[in-house]
Image 1 (cartoon, each protein chain N blue to C red):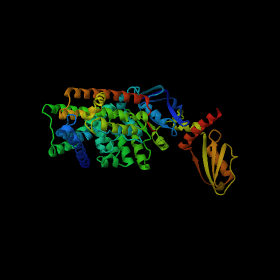
Image 2: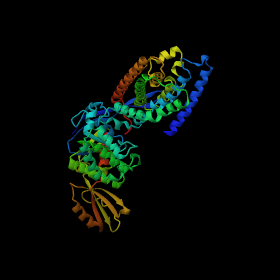
Image 3: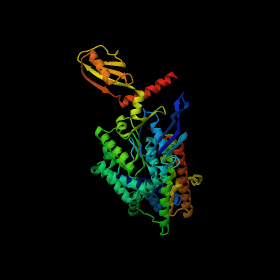
Image 4: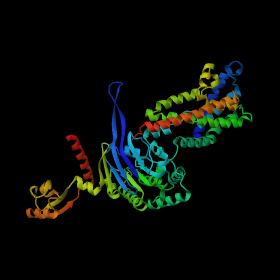
Length: 325
Length: 240
């Protein structure tokens, strides 16, 4: 569905350098990115602000011409066949609107039907499906400017699906939504992916989106791909440690001398201890026994590193690498 | 719409008073072929054409370029220029009824007005549509300059001043000295407003006037295409 090879995009940045002079330098927003996305996949594309996510999306949708490298999406070269591509893919920008601000939602859909030349029966069927699943019924005749953000986003997603695209690109689709709206949107997208087989590519800062929707995660920073793979693999790769949290009956000195424990963090003056341990050296069961032999245990839990943690560590690893060089 | 028309009529009265006073002071009560009826017709038709051709320009596309929302327009399977032109023609059709007709009716009912001869009517309609096309071509270029300038308010302001004087709103272009009229012939400016008025009141050669409009409508449309194609390939779309 998507083939990207050695993709690079440079921008010229001007800076003030004296009274009337400007200094120019070239910055690579995307710097040698390669990846493939197969039909039917759901891929999360994450990275900090300024990492090159949106620049990549713009090149995938044909709005920006790559400085070098090749892109093929849905079998076409995006920047050369932008119109052709637009008929095959759908794009949702969380921070922009493709609906007509002053028109009722329904009229926006009618306009899109004409622009994308969707046949009347297809249009009716697809709209009916979205109206039902996304519960658009109550505000279908409300002007877009009067919709809440959650309602508008549901409208935006519908607008991008009326021409039944094979690929849906979502740029921060859940930004600014409340928990319930986010969950409803995720549920709908998950179903779209599994039932209809629509390929999803989404950028997000909300890692719950990834956890819920994307079996595959790509992490980008400073214009290069740091990691690409299933979430579970990335987790194992960056943090082989797991953490055992124990609540003790009485405060105790750090239990950092137990076998396999790599670090300890104390809370409540030593009554709660976070013991990070190497999975390949010891097991959770063995560690619990060891702890119980030293102190009276009130409660305990084994914690997997949070997805935020995994991503943060990926960034850290990259920055450490840069400093060593 | 009603407020717009009211303002429009008041300004029409003012402009008519000033021009008729000038006419009164002129030897023979005529200036450059304009008698009272021609002047009245020039003023009220001009007041109607103002909104019909969006004489001072608009900033819809410029704002979308500035905010980056133009990306949404660019990934649709349409030709952006043609889509905007279609939208503008729709707007003009609406303005023909709501903004063009009322001041003309006011002028025709209350003052000595000069209607065109029957054979000039169809030419006037063609000329009016061409005026919208030329105006669209200019406005598209002014708006598209935002792709390079990032902020085109300076260009917009200059355009507003230039069209007011050079398109024949302040005074008829026939009042200008010979050399200025000759120079303006090489620009699209007269085609936006003075041309349909000339056709209506029967000044100048029909075919030269309309031919000049056709040339600029086509030339500006092609220039707009070129500009958009370059902008899309060369220029950065704003915002994350």
